[in-house]
Length: 162
Image (tube, rainbow, N blue to C red):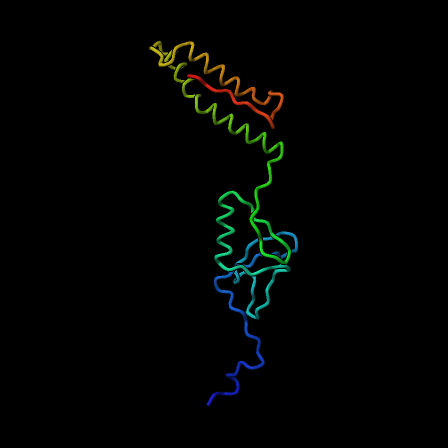
């Protein structure tokens, strides 16, 4: 015979959040993802002011989308969605162009150094003086890219023919 104290009658059954992820906010301003053990106390109270429960698959789909370049957008009381990234600001675009320019300079810098070192040692150079001067002019064009009239929205990168 069952003991009267063994009955679940009258007691609320706590939901099983295993394998789930909460998408929500602790302060009503910043949103993020939370594992159940970080926001659900022993009594089943959830310490988020606004939240939705996601399955593990839903959470992974959002993470995969973010990995593919999409951005996760949180919505009050609704599940997060994936959206296209916002276009960069002019400052952000200028920084991207400068990084690309710096990488292009780095790709040929070794040839300049090799020519200078070979010349200093008085040994035959791999590049002719004309090629060396073309590379120097190319690097200078890259450095001047920020002086182009359309910078940073309309930029033409120089090409090195040698």
